[in-house]
Image 1: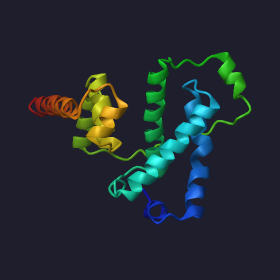
Image 2 (image 1 turned 120 degrees about the vertical axis):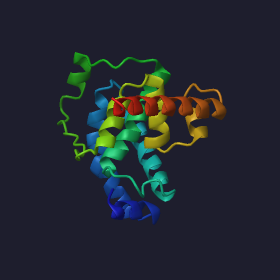
Image 3 (image 1 turned 30 degrees about the vertical axis):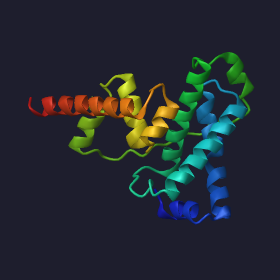
Image 4 (image 1 turned 135 degrees about the horizontal axis):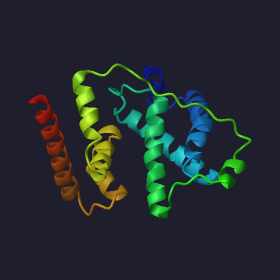
Length: 185
């Protein structure tokens, strides 16, 4: 992530922050439409994701992030979309009404950085994808989104921090065992 963007957030530079907000807004709305949410929900999610991104910058959580600002922002927003869909118990279907409703908006391509992965990163990605849904969600919330144990308790159905910690430990143990078993083959 570009340091100038992080510094804009940290030092509260309104002009640069507004420019960053505006730059990615339309692309995020197009990205979010495929989940069948209405415009107002998507605007709210984008604003919340942008605020979370700024908090991460202020708290120093973006210092070692290798992805672009856009990729990181969309990652936060995607989980917020999932949380809202879960809350509404809504399935993600794309029907003809949704398509025609937004036909006037031109689609924007979302590009994710495609860097060469090390062998360790490839192993991690392969075996991470083999984990169960709950493990993937928990590890993503903690390591990728940088949420605290308390934040995870608030956002999920876990009942306490100790439950989250023990589940995280079990998930990591499973992941390590899968990677270790492949290396020993």
